[in-house]
Length: 447
Image (tube, rainbow, N blue to C red):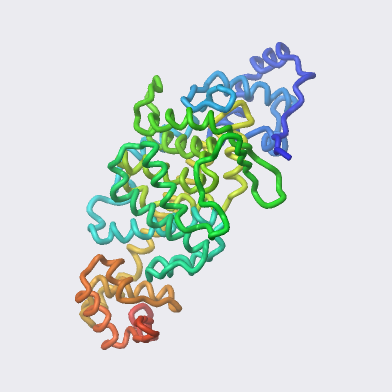
């Protein structure tokens, strides 16, 4: 059964009476509308139960006024629904301040003071962000693997052992490709197919057909879980083929939009558009989030490679689905989807700032003691800091080389020196040598 939003019964409301009353109480009504349409964008189901009615208005009457005000402020997008009507959106109160902050600190300086990070540390942060995004984006699509196991697989460059790990590896390699060669490519159908192939390669067994473009008359239904309600039925293949050409022009900034649209808004719209069209039999969600990153990195917002947006979205998957549903079923109002994604983006930025501050201030005394007393270099110090906070973890020569972007001999010297100084122990298992932290590491952190 197709899920339908609960909508208020407005049949008994008198429009002229409501307008007259709204004008009379315009200050309290404006305050109410700002509360549910400014700092956040709420639908009827939230307004009905959570927000008190000002001046004796019924909730139904208030909702009618809210819809009138929202309609007045809406901007037509270039995205069409399956019936040929355009989606619309509104500039919420906090958009201008948020985008101003982004644009004043574009790219790598988005979260950092100038010059605080060298090239090696920036690459480490990008690698961390890409890993976290690859894992969370795959988990959103059903990958049944813990973050810890998945991260270890990527760090150790171990081959995937199941469908879930393959999804995560594919996502990681795709994110790397976006941050590398694809950011300089124009969008095209071939590029969409190539990206989709990257994220779905090897994710099905021999008995099932690999993910592909949908065929004529082949329906796709979106559900939250097996046996649950159907939240969305994707449009037919004829509509998809027509609209994906317009999506490509939009992604290349070649579609006349009649006004400037901020790159973050456009990236979120691309995310929504692919999700709405659902052109493939599988992998649409991962592809949508991949195009979000592609557009922003291509347009100079390369620091977004630090931000695992899906990690934040994964904490509220039902809200993520409902952001799509609200946008589709409440008069094609994209503001719901924009508000949800920007709110999660703000959380991702905050989390990254907190992580960076913690890393930057992580026991300065330890760094000084490590350098002066033991003659350790910055790579060795960072490895010991990691082991101090993750005592059960391990590393390998390949991982140390990859994280620090150093040659094999340099990595060997780093690790052997730490073994000699009793900070690490080496344990050979088959062909691999694993390095584990020792109790001595605590001496650097604890008085």
